[in-house]
Image (cartoon, rainbow, N blue to C red):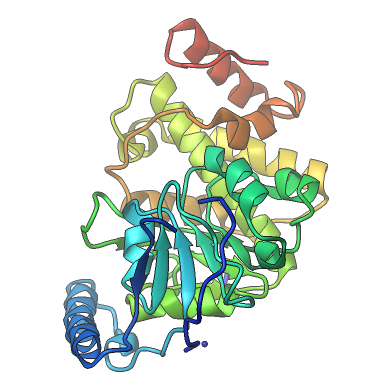
Length: 326
């Protein structure tokens, strides 16, 4: 699947009682902050160049990174803290409020899925269209119910092993252009921010994004499930020791989605997912966030997803699931 890949002055804030008591603003208004940001930019460029050289990749972004515009970031975890380093930002943590000011700039939601209800409910109405969803899993039905089906979404094929640690990009032997993708009005702004961090992001149309989203959903639903059912410590172990089962489930879910959604996946899905697994091979296996991940396939029934659904039942019988199956 070959997919082709703005500075606003932060004004005064008016807020609603939602997610700004402890909000942290990263800006370059003062000379000292400008120097600090310049120093950090140089360090990041050197780090990106070193990272690329160890992998035999030509990293043009190390020579010249695009200027990134202001954005609001919700969540100070591993992903949120990483994104904050990419340009002028307002970082909101639990208990902080989303400003009604700066309309038209992205609000990057770097939280778990179970925080979305509160964030959307307490977001100023004029900022709802600026919400950018970065979560794993199947969000289409949920966003449609909230009237946010056209909002910007992103598939993050990257991992941050621990807070402050260098991220691992989804650049693989099959997809050297990277697998991370974004669609929507703020997709380019998000891609620019990742580029400033030396990370790849492809800006795509909704038509290209949809099968890519399902492909990522199939990856996380398959490798985590097979790994858990077979008591593997990592997705790499699951892929290496249970290759045939992984392939069987992936192909089963690809066919199920094509039938249910009326979409067609580009050739080479299994190769793409296996190559990405090699990049994040140490990622631990666990079946979690069921309602956002495996539930989509489980509800399609045993006719379309027999192997997947039986593996879920097996995991439940063995006590490997912390939730009940519907």
